[in-house]
Image (tube, rainbow, N blue to C red; front, side, top):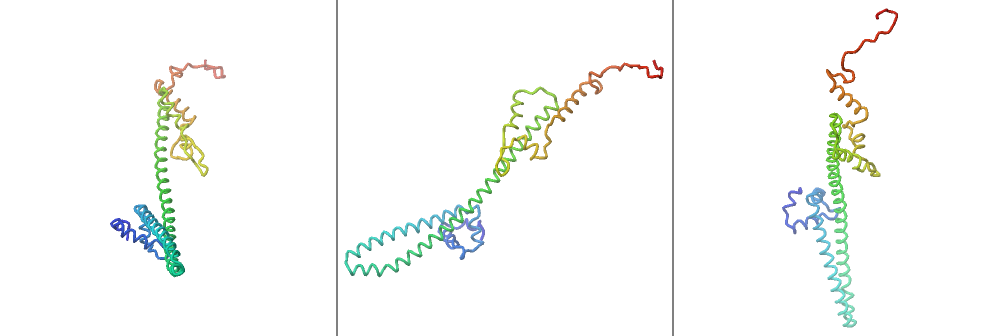
Length: 238
């Protein structure tokens, strides 16, 4: 029996199925696995809460009725007291069964709550990972923007600097102590498929820009025809 089949049960049938599987020794593991499936676990918890509240209400009502019966019996003298004590064994046995029922339901609820926490933790972890991945994509885009700007040699505006500074000001928690780590450090160390813009790369970029602005690819300060400089080297070339 899978979760899809259980969704078609009405409330009474679903509640009875939950009750039949609340006690671990009597539990059908396949059915219980379906009952704690993420798609059904909230309904299962609601059913257990309903069972517990209903049983608690019956216990409270019977206790009030029992007290009223005691007062009536004792008011009738010895005969009434004998009737009261004669009924006590039956009442105590019923109360014991009702208390066991409550414990069974409460234990099942505790188990459901533990499973629910694990599901929530898993969902939260996945959501956090998705957010982290999107933040990585954003940091990578900013990094590429900064690198492209460095290669082009354009004049950066204030908005560009503020955008690039976000790589240093925005942090994410890392490690067991959740130490704040900047996005730039994440790009440099943890997100290893990214090559950071370092000082050497910037020098190479400046050199490339200089070469591109010179005639025939030669830097402007070296343009023109070089003049020969003759030095007496013993070969009498002057």
